Each structure stands twice: as structure tokens, then as C-alpha cells.
Image 1 (spheres, rainbow, N blue to C red):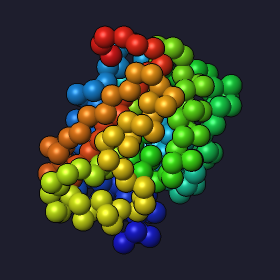
Image 2 (cartoon, rainbow, N blue to C red):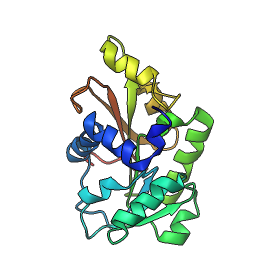
Image 3 (cartoon, one colour):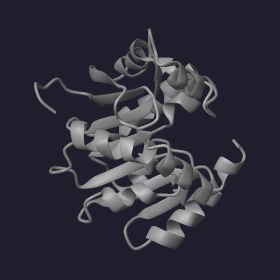
Length: 205
């Protein structure tokens, strides 16, 4: 099954059926404000279906290292955004302009601490002071629903963390980091950690 998820259409179908795609949309609704956003970098964008829910005025650039996902995204959504096969690094802003918002949906739990720290540092280097970093990942917690725990334990990503671990991972680089734990975003029992961070301290995001 894990190999089948490498096929773009199978991956997206599973995301829809499990309620995980809608979970991303609910997290966007509850924790993001697109009103002041002009450019988005989406790291690990997958097949790109999320762009259908991004305001059309926003310049969207999706990055993924899986050429099959990017081929699918360009086939469907090239009129709405740019999708490129490349790992994200600090040169992205030189190539595509500086973003206001960087998304990493379901990505951090695929990275060990060293690699994740490096990516987060690159994100901080690219974002302006007002920019926002947003991540959504599966999350372990105490007294967790056993179905949720089982799904997380058997995820393709081998670095699912607790909320404090996600907090520590990002807060080392971003002074203002908040992690919200939600169990109500998908119909399948599943615990999500929503990480929202920026470099400057303000009272409201």
C-alpha cells in the first residue's frame, strides 16, 4: 500500500477518503489568513490539489522531489501555479521571488531532526520578518485514540513527533512558534499538530 501511495491519483484518493485533505482545509480556515499573502512556497506539494483552495491572486510555487507528483500537478494545474521538481533550499527565493507564506503539509514527519532543522533554517532565511511558516503533521500524544496511534505508527513518515517535539524543532529558529493539537479535523481518528511560526513577536497572526 505504501508503494501505491507514490502514484499521484492513488495518493490523493486516499487523502480524500480518509478525510486528510479536508483536514488541511480546516486547518487553513482556523489558523491561516491569506488576505496579506502575495506569494506561497509549498514544500512537499505532492500532486498539487491544494492549489484549488488557494486564492487565485496569489503566486503559488510548489516544490516536490517526486517527479510523478509534479508531472501530475503540472498536467492539471499549470494555469494556476508553478510546480517544480527540486529540493527546497535558500536559492528558491532567488529563483522565484520572496514568499510571504511557506507551507509544509505532511512533510516534517518524514525528516529526522538534523534534516528538519536544516529545512526550517532555510525557511527562515527565505521568509521576510512578517512571513509565516505553517506545517501540518501527524502527532503522538498521551491517551491517544488507539486507531490514531496505529495509523501514525504505520505512517510512511518515520519521524512522527509529539507537540512539544515539533515546538522545539521549529522554535529553535522561529522565536514565535505555536503548535496546536487537534483530534477533530478528519473523520478517521487522527491527531494533528498544526505548527504556525514567524520570526517576529506579535500578538495576533
